[in-house]
Length: 221
Image (cartoon, rainbow, N blue to C red):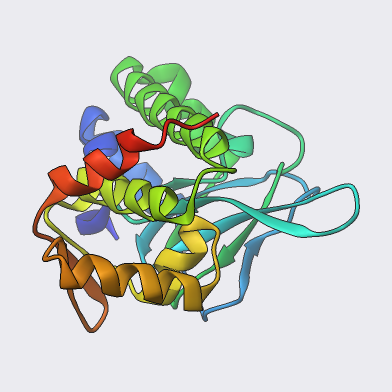
């Protein structure tokens, strides 16, 4: 587990002694696709670090309809911000979008690092700021054309993973909030234009400027 932790930029800011202590208290867990890491409304007892796989943050509307509000990838690491900021309960559920490996860190240990390791706290704030920016962008695009939402999702993934992003057509359609059939039709058109290519479990953005132009051509709101 320590080899995983030291690869995360977030944990490079803490001392070796604290890292050893964290390794002792943390727990490695594996989840099958569809299994729940934590549920909305339950006590926020742990922070989760996503090592492998994708996790959907899902919140229920007042009518009880589940809505995916964010997708957490290994590059974005943190899952369970309610426990990070000391909230009594999780504001959303975390559901494994794929088979997922995650590290559970007790809230008390994470809070101690925030208090005692200033560099660590700064890294957490940076991740939180990026998360809030992505959420704001996603909200502003909620009523945008599907083409624009897919372009946004691909460009966001490119900013995280680089030219080739590890995602399936189904995962991308879920991330963009659209039907799988609709996303397939639009992505096929993008392929014909030479903007992207795809193979099993990944997509490569050949002409990201075209996606950016598509995004900019339909201002949200």
